[in-house]
Image 1 (cartoon, one colour):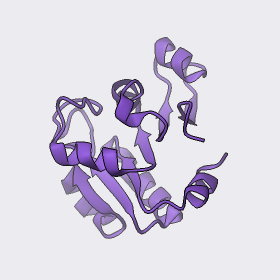
Image 2 (image 1 turned 90 degrees about the vertical axis):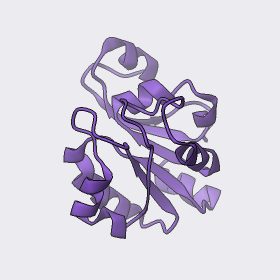
Image 3 (image 1 turned 30 degrees about the vertical axis):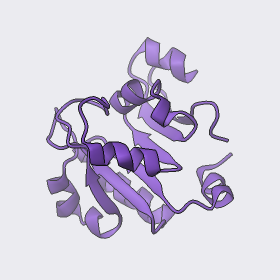
Length: 150
């Protein structure tokens, strides 16, 4: 089932999009403008870890004019729920659908109860363990949901 069908079927008031790398933020902006969802919330790290997108990048690209913004408050890779802000956790709880980009977001969220049944993961497979978990091959770019979403 396509993402558009799920959004349409669920009559969603909100979609959360968890960003990843600063270099991909332009893709994110284009993708988000295609979804054109008024309740879209885009989140970034509280501070850069490696090359992660931050609020400064969001403002620089104008993405803040395309989506509602929130920061995870985290200075760690992925979305380790013990290291993110209460506001970010509430954002996840309130979201009926989440798109989480990047392998670190997959590794930190795929097993969390808060994410089950509502998270689509978009990432490039960079190790065999993640390939096995995603049912994909090393090097593949995948967009998939864990069981329970559809």
